[in-house]
Length: 500
Image (cartoon, rainbow, N blue to C red; front, side):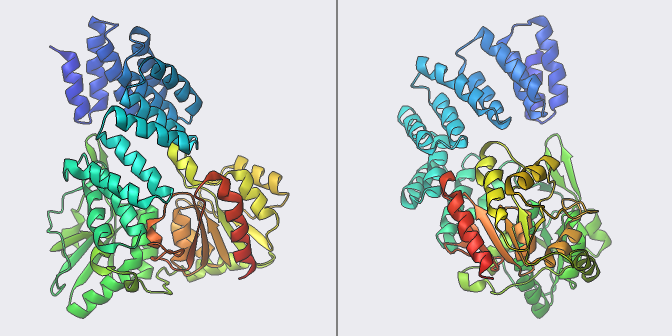
């Protein structure tokens, strides 16, 4: 039996553990087989076994020092582990021997981009396209960077070039990225059209077993409409902004809304949208991808149509004028809010909540967040009290902020702000304002109409070309287009808070 071929088949099907068994049997017959070692590296990485994956890739490179795919995959793994210097040191010598290798140029460009060396990254992407015209990944990455840098027309032309390959899974991410640019420019028609491509992006939307037809905006008369979850918590909270319009339409036309909720949000949404049937999201993580199950639908009377929550704006938010302002759509638990009000009663006001990162970091995500020392400099001179609303805050982070700023932070006790989102919402409701990185916390605040200052590095499509979050207009965006701009952004934020 060809155990290598069997392993490839199993890995392609997502059965990585069984694939490793097959590859190990193949390796037993030929311990130095580079094909098998490379496949083992990829499979180990898919299973989150970073050290094992690194070892396998390095074994491949010992035997074949110039093997591009091993160099690229190892560099990608090192970037994922925040070892960018090692990734760069791996790639540069390889490029000295083969400067015309577009894959190596792309890999080094990605590395330099995540290191903040943006001009270098742009040059490397352009060079990759000279070596391989039409290189999809380089086109999209270059377009993304140009869009973030304000060169929107050039970026749009590159997205259009990338999409000449057609509308398929390979180009879905490019189409989704183009959607972001269209929407950031206030082009709702083309933006929402392209935003539908997210459904084609592998791993973006779970497979569903409800078997329902997709709602496309027709009358809701006699319709039980299932609104499905597909996004992370932050997007779930943001798109919930559209639910009041959908609910009003359903009530006017004789329909009913059934809302699938991320479990941590179910109590909050049930209180905020009392006429809606809320049910926990039943998600299964399988070897071949995530699946959403809907056996519960029949027990509550069923549904005869569905729509993803992220698809609602295409029907209900066709222009800037369709977004209500002001807009308060999240309702905190009154008793829980009162308990936090009492807990904070003796603190000097104003109460400013801070959240400096998401729960995920590393690689490109690290560029989205201001350095901790700049947060410390910001809070040093803030009036009142600074309350930590960072979920998953590490003791070392708190200690560093206090040491650098010279002030004591208020760290809420007896609450897991990541898991207890309903309680966290109530906590945030008693603050005077929140300053946050682009995280779910900013939406918990803005959804309640709280003065929110969102500090962001990347292009924000959800403002549609303004400085306000359209879905939660009490949130103001302060954009740092380059890392050097963070101090100015913090200064503007402090001035905004002082003016409240």
